[in-house]
Length: 214
Image (cartoon, rainbow, N blue to C red; front, side):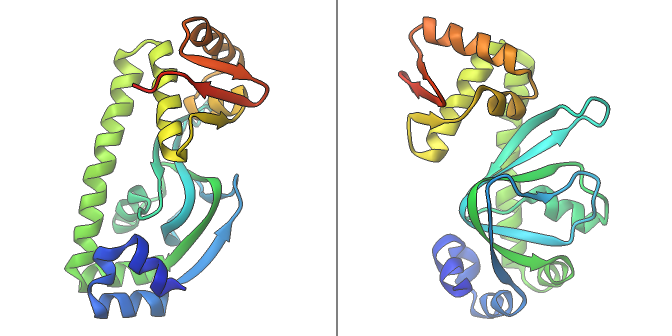
């Protein structure tokens, strides 16, 4: 099963027979339900995840008031790049990772991941490419947080959710969106109502439909 997962979602890693063989030997595959916290902020890195199905989200948690801001997503074929960089520095995690949709994840023990990094340049190339990709996502988040009004920030969030989940019909709640964006349910409800009045979305119980995606 791990071999098939690597072939399908991590072809760059699977192309190297020795690397693939070692990954299969040291890894295990697990199923996680939506809502499962797979990485706590302030904890040491114990495993490196390779997501093969579902979706996870990475947040930055404000220690004073407990508010959280969504930083980036972990999709099939990706890992948590912050976990890897934190592991290398032997520091505690500065982010939190939560399973958004029921997921299957290949789990690599942290100590074994460090050994892999020393032995296989292809693994490091995979991590560098992923880091560059996620850096672009973080820059986009910073631009939206810093330069955009709240309406645009919310609309961009909804569009990204729609792209990731492959549907313009988002089954979610105002509270869940507020959690992702580090806001309050009341603020999100008001902004959603404004987007609906502007003809950009349609609101129904537990469902938000995007009418314009460009």
